[in-house]
Length: 219
Image 1: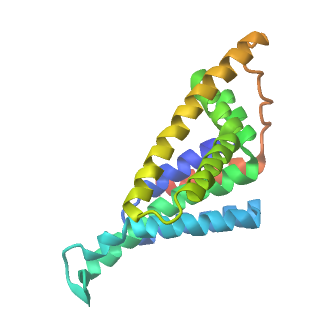
Image 2: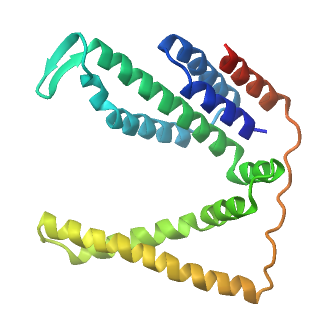
């Protein structure tokens, strides 16, 4: 099972207190990537994730401490650089491992593991339906954004973003209304219980990864 490994790995990463301790989990992340061999599209997602989290924690560079480099925003400090890499490392390794595992194992496999581990039924059902209709939601949002761009040509930036905010609200309203129609359609077809997913069998590879993550947690 992959879920115990992801859980142990994430707990191990967020409880580290130094970059030296975090290096073990960085090597484990590299090992997971080499073992699973994800598709190229996963590396694009990891690149976006790294950039997003880097921007999210960039202000940590300016934490009080010994001056290192002066910028228009203030002094970058030694302590700030250390804090930045600690925050970025923890966030990226935790989220990056989950991205690699889920994209490679497949979301249905993760849902099956959640059922096998007795996660609340309402949680697995919510995730299953979200995954099922995520493409539909994205398609609806893209279609409405295209309609907005075709009708808002030449308007000012302030007005454009105001219309964009209204559009986001409209997407949520449409999603809610469609949800009601889908639910009624399911009831009319006799939906009572979500079909059980095939439980994943034991896997030596995932067991070894979980033991390595547990070892790093205990060190």
